[in-house]
Image (cartoon, rainbow, N blue to C red; front, side, top):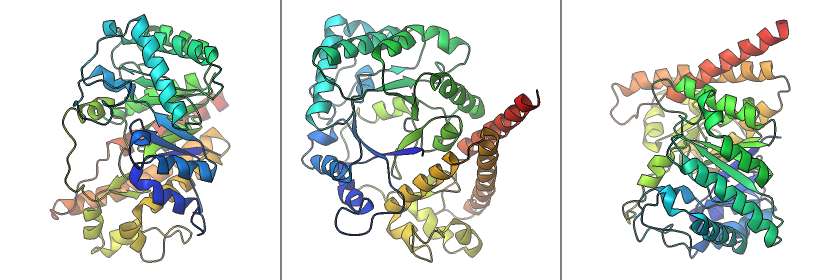
Length: 405
């Protein structure tokens, strides 16, 4: 069974209780296998509600320390900056010397353990370039985390978060430059590796980046179970490549862009109302603005292709897409993931994924044609779909070629 890790906010506690049937109702037909929260959530006034829901449901609870924020300036009043290990000033590799690393490890681990995390995520940094000094910092953090856990008799499972930019994913240059990190990973001896491949679904040659992610997963899975981190757009292709699951948000936070995430915390958070949460459309592999769905509903041919026909998930007519979109997103992501995981042979798995994505591309093209004449309808970004289609067809052919040879 493949794993779906859902990143919840403090506003999602009631949703989680409903999904897991904790308030007396029937549990959802498919549910997240783990719950993840941002580092500041447990320290907020209502953050313990998410941890309590996870504990009552009997599912693992992870706290993402998000220590890559140290690599950029953060607003002084940002919730992350106010954490014991948070900083508003930008740090360089030289700032994180041996003593600073020891302190960071202790603070990060203590924060997670004290707030009920069921596994430890060591401090991690964004390895965007291969020659800027952060690789040695990451190696040092993992070595010191292992020593800290052993010294303090902390026996929780360890999830090593490997945060790589697209340059570090290069199948030739990447592994050689990452040798210090991979050596430290072996010393850390984690229960699993969470691969955060930043901007893998972007760029002019997106299919090359997605293929590099696939190759990195295949390399890592020889030694560790791999989770695709923050990969709502690429989660299924990662599982087809051998990852045991993927993590993403509910409507938001579906794509891994660590630089953009860090930049978003440079200014104070807006106190005004947030826009409506986007709605997950399985055929497109992503969420779309709610306003777009309201426009599509007036076009029967497109609406009939988008509405959820899963009676276990949504009532007939597509009302849940507009009224209960969060539960729909969780159930459909979990079910689609389980469908891929049940396919035993790799060639059949790639064949299935290629067919699903090609159908999604056809739907996206129809929506985009309508968007040219409908200002309220947002254009669907097909970059990730095109990349997953290209990679799926290529891997299917590769598997068949190896079998013939």
